Image (tube, rainbow, N blue to C red; front, side, top):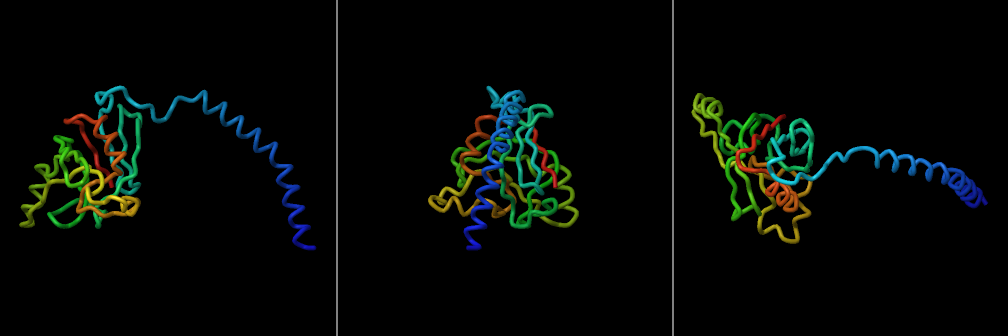
Length: 186
């Protein structure tokens, strides 16, 4: 008896709320149709003026001026906090660099090189007697990931690179030209 009374009350509440939900959906749809798209697809790579990475958000943003054109989920090194100090620390660098060349035959689907280490990075590592490392890239998943590609989502697994899904890498590859500045923030 108690279950049927609870079920009756639940169904009655749903019946009363359905018209309100329908009206709210219509209002939101009308408002959304009047707003400009937050992520228009640029016609060419020349529209992307810089790449912004926010490590704490695990996001990579393709920017045109101050407008976000596209955003992607990223994975970082196994020790993501802080600036890369030396080869093997598994950190992703922080600072301003350039995306300077690309590799279509990468071990990680496709990759675009980040101009790390800078002169300052070399100076810091040298002062400590360390090798700053290099070969920091934006790249897709390991080529051998195959059916296990899903297992990389949401994990920090690189040696200091910035990893995205292969689909995201295809978009970045097409939209970002060599020479594009990249800012990597904590």
